[in-house]
Length: 240
Length: 240
Image 1: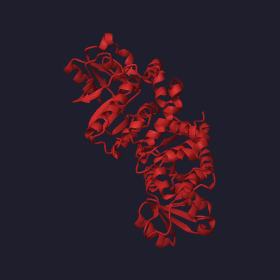
Image 2: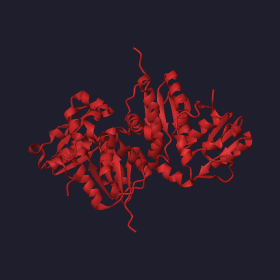
Image 3: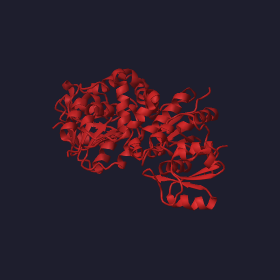
Image 4: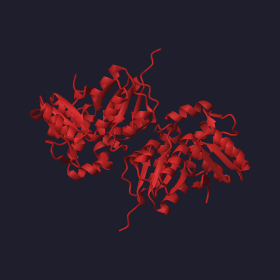
């Protein structure tokens, strides 16, 4: 008898250790805005994206590899780095053939946790590359953990919405006994046709919209505008 | 200027430590079925309920105080204890004037965490005592944490639904910048008129319904059938 692989959702990195993720694919989700920017930069021809947690590491690696350093705190480019976290900053005319070294606290933390816990494969997911993520998960037929990066470990709506969007597309191919997945799926089902309106209620919106990033946040919840699969290979996110 | 108190929801005990709960009221929520049974037993005249995590402690305390010992594993009464976890087992004719010593792993764990982290007051919440919880929170005007007990730290739908029911009633009295609260509120709004149908999709339903507890679970999501406020005082849950 063929058994379908399992799918679980973790709504915060703090919940990862509850699950055995060995031999699983972990999808790192950081919708506002790290994984949206990663998909966009790679889609527009970046050679690779190096995700780092700390600013100093970003500067050091940026020098070593001759890459573009990028990162924000409170909606402003961090001193010592060259660019911000916005996907709009990485059109093909700018990023093609270059390496992007991106500081992303929440996403990088989860990525390293997944690595340490023995995930067999790590990819990044966001609305701009929704379809590519879904196709990869269905094709690979392994157990899946949809990992929301959250914000300082606090559950956030936008990452859960993306988990729900994935689940709604691929659920027939997986065994899903997971209330977090059910919650994400129900939330996305209810909100999918009014996403621009709904994300204005989130805590992240209130943090970022103060910096005039509305267009950015709307891009970050629009499906399939940068439809490639960033996959983790020896410290880099690349398209294979 | 009057500042409203804050309200946060934690979807799993693992997320409690992210928040500063000093001087906050923590509502311990364990809908299937511990906090529903606690409300019901106290509503029906139990002198107090002593929540314990371990079976041996339950037996020992039960002997010492001359109380009714109760607890289940996998839908069966635990060997050495006298009764189960079902609210239906505690009508007034049986429980009035008695002490109930109840093993409840997830709920007791969260309660002790809240105590150690310095919560100023701990109460238990469930649909049978929804209104009493809401009235207490509004009247007391302190910061609130709605604490979902979850299941072995995994997020569950039924506790989140109760958090959503509370939020929908009292949100105008609180400052709520919390995506977990928004998620719980949206979920309850969408499902409130089809709760019996929706809970059949949860993982807990699938664990418990195998033991013929459907009526129990339906009771546990019905509002205000045991409308008192269990409050924690020196190891006991009592009505004051």
